[in-house]
Image (cartoon, rainbow, N blue to C red):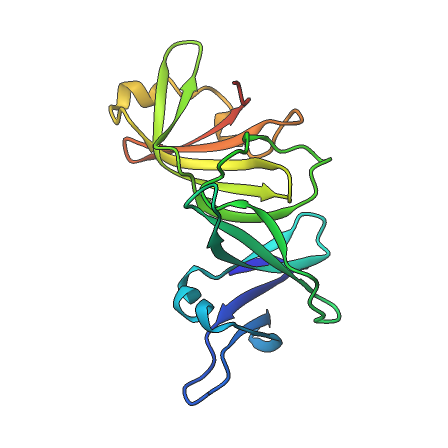
Length: 210
């Protein structure tokens, strides 16, 4: 499910009894669902239908059906593809490769306005993300991120996950007056992070360092 142009879009399997191998993309406006497009599927994609999900174009012009395809001779990880779908005309564009599913060969920077790409939520392949703060360092594990992908670049808009140290004292080191209002990036390339610790949701604004 993804929200684009003020509406939710969802992807489903065809109803029972449908013989054609297709994936349905719907646009939801209030209480009304309208079929946006039917995407034909190749036979080998039937077994990977669970990996299909939607992304949105960061400039708001389209949504994309995301699917993990075949691996390559260079790496066992599958290549991720996006099929563009125009929201106004329901026309489908040419599939675009956006790199390996495990982000191999990509350096994850914070997103800036010059990166126009496909926005999707996904688990990060790395086991944890390190936070460096004036008073302490911590790790966030079970990391989930909002990524922006192009054919050549990858950046991150937001991350969330569990703080490794769940003590109230450690969580208090990540708070400061006004921290709850840190809901938007103040500088280009800043990344919004949410750390869950001590039954609290801690909003953070971070800069990506190498």
